[in-house]
Image (cartoon, chains in turn brown, blue):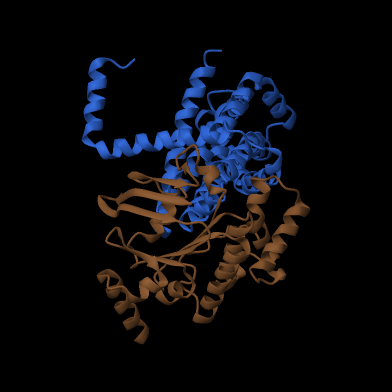
Length: 244
Length: 267
């Protein structure tokens, strides 16, 4: 379980996160929704120690995140970046097997076997393994990034805007993949998105981040019928955009 | 020695630009951190053999062209200037000795290192800063891979190997350039030229150039990596990081050069 307690973060004097309290429960799919620039990605990056908070604490499985524990905590977390962030100079196979080679010192045959296994799991063609990220489409990049995140069978997978920039068909396929991986690997998935349809479609729980605070947290059912002002405004703006 | 008044004047000048001074201090701290954090960590050097070989190819072999051209031309220019300005006052033997000494002690190491900053240093900063802005560095961190270990360490080792070798190569080509002028243009005997070179060679001066190679390699690579890792977002950030790295590298190499010469002058 991940427990975020009283996290605050400012950039250039502007408070982005203001005393955030949130738990990620084991096995659930939690989606954090909110407007662009509200600090959703910052919150995810704080939990893996990519950004330091100004105050507050993060506990991952009862271990306090700090400079001494951050590398061990990261081994429990897979992170899928919005930009996919595959290493451009490495092939897809090398990207996916990177942690196995440099953290777990596995031999080449074992790495290859595990990489192919993972590539199949994310429904990528095996031919993609030898290709370089610059030759992949958006959907393939996202699948490769997911493969890299899950190869160590992490307990938690963080997805930063996993469907942004993808066409609706590929976006739905990625959502289905997230759902199936969550069931197959029995992981806890935390998704950051501003796509309400996606959030409602795959989440167990939705949290709304606005004005630096968690203004709503509840099940999909609660989210659909809530009278929360922030949720209603966000939904109205989202569906208005969809209609246009 | 700096007396109290000098120190007061220096501090007064620095206080006029407090932000610039703090930025400079912050960078110096960052460069030291990059150097020591990458080098004095527990490394699995054998599992990084491929990465180190790749970097030797990029930094060392990739820079042979620019070092060759700069060194041959440098040798030609050095001997031409000495011959042109002093040729009528000193015997030709001394011209050869002057060229050989200046190449072994100074020009070979400095020339090769500045060429390497331009070729390899800029590549390192541009590569790392692009990785930084495209979140590849963050991706490494989330996989529990330390970028100082995976990216900086192989480049440092490759620099320790490449810089001294390229400096020897540069010294050879500097002298070759000088020989082209003295033997083929000026008509001095090749045997006499080689005798002059042999006579003026001192092991301690050659050792000094090797020390410079290692120190300049460490300076240039740690500065290039530091500014790459601290690049801000966007193409502008990549450009700024590369420019600043070159400026810091060149100034630091000249400073280190002066200090090494001072230290070796004790012997």
